[in-house]
Image (cartoon, rainbow, N blue to C red; front, side, top):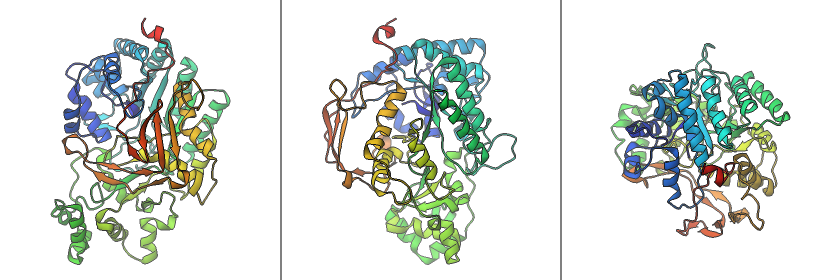
Length: 511
């Protein structure tokens, strides 16, 4: 928990509403859902961990201290505005981070990308001065060690001053180029020894800057520096269907039927007169400045990279725009007909890092033990992504189903999901099936592994909706020796607990 710089602790009394608001605009977790779910029984991060430690889960959980909450706790509105932290602010942050890591936080997370926005502008910490970042990393080291997790600037390929326009609607230019961010993380690691891990997705808009960043990482890895870029094992995607954002959400004729149940809405949209009206209309203005709430516009601007699921490795000829050109029709009409298919259950996806039409770059990353298979948000961006299915996809696609490219041994793929991330986070009590280590085991029907199509459900408090994607082929799942799932069905057992920072000994925590 606490990735990408957002989370619920530490807490400055009275800051609850702001932290929930940030999670709503950044991660699409509705405030109403959090209000119904959260008992604010903490202020310090240590108290927060104690609350988590008093409960049980389907798996172990661990927590990073989020930079947004840290700035809110110390600087309040100045932090929200991304004001430069004073020496006193930095000292206060340093103390909080030190105490949090001592208590068991794995480290600290931050976001330096302008895709994450609040009404004050980029997420607090986006423009943090190097002195602030260094003090945070030093506090992690002084407390015993840990990780610094980051969403780096420059991933969109558009940086302040270059005059380029972002492919993501509403996204401001980032403050720093990607290769400079890699050098900043190298500097942090060299100064403190703290492990750095960060989002690292391929984007055709980055151009030569991407190659510069890859080269800087190669130099860092050759020097033994612990920098671990995170990548998705399938195209980074944003989802679109009738229950989520889509191209026609802001069309008047669509809005007049938007209240209908999904299947009835799809049937109505199939009527020739309704179809013609919706396709002919202009969009009504969008009342938001949040890029993540403007994805319908992003889909419209990127139809050359929008595909119909369930295929996550389609040919370029299968994109909405390519199919439209081949048939001589408007791309929006192709998108429309795909959208209403199967009684509106169809799911379309914008593949943000699939400009080359293949996953060759991901194959290269998969071969490199310094790169982490990651970015599988389990409960974030509720109505935009559903990447908790990454592990199943990795095993089934790269180990069994791959057609274009190289298949990998199942043992290697399992290591990428278990041993490697455990190593990066400092855990040595799991990742192998040997006496003395935790019995965290999946028994897999390898040939039976499969994923369902993402679907929208309303199983959250206050009736909030989210995408889920079912996975099949798991004969048994054990957590610390207890069976939590059998034949893909939850047993109800909750043997999981809080996993505290393994680099900080129990005796050190008590100091």
